[in-house]
Image (cartoon, rainbow, N blue to C red; front, side, top):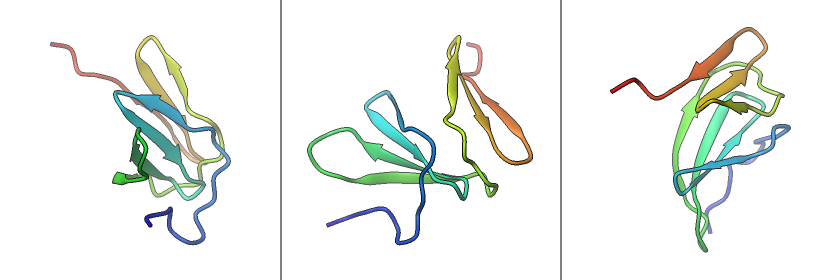
Length: 78
């Protein structure tokens, strides 16, 4: 049975997009989990900074605040 790594702590609420659930851990790792009946971590993205706030979604942009930065993740224009 797959799980999150031992010691992973979560303060932020998860969010869903395009068939995946995103779980942002306090240490800055975002676990991308397949939405479905079986738990499967598809990939992990690491910001390498303290993250306590729930990301915000505005006008198609994902805003993530860490202890030292504010990230805006958006689709590139076509």
